[in-house]
Length: 195
Image (cartoon, rainbow, N blue to C red; front, side):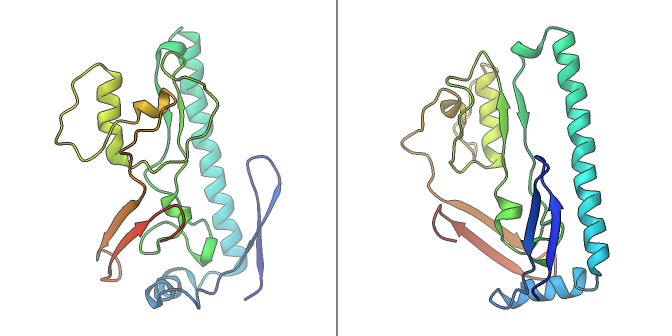
């Protein structure tokens, strides 16, 4: 298919996302799309994308209410603010929605925004390193001044806040999918260049 799905990004610019027929992808991806999302009309796809972006706008407004209250109560500069998600949503990319079996970047590459004026050196910069949800427990423990146990799966990202990259930081991302959808299991290993 060569149809184009258009949307509007947060800056108001038009997006053109070419349809992906998944012919060069694993058969299980094609099956997921066919069984779950292939029956949607183009109008239904557009409506689903519009609803998703509306939901994101609502979440942004609610988050803004929290930030406003922190400002009003004088707690803004003494609060660690972390804005992230546990996974992304395909939102029509590759003809898919939600998350699940496919291992495309839309579901796995999640941006995170951190604001902590008292604890971030050189704010406003971007760090392009692999961080997982397992890294948040040691991070919050360290920020709270609590001893971080050695047996945790993750590592604190506090060095990144201090504008340092630990020498032993991972250069790969690992994930697995254990057959809860379509009775399929897969393992994912990704570096910055390969998956």
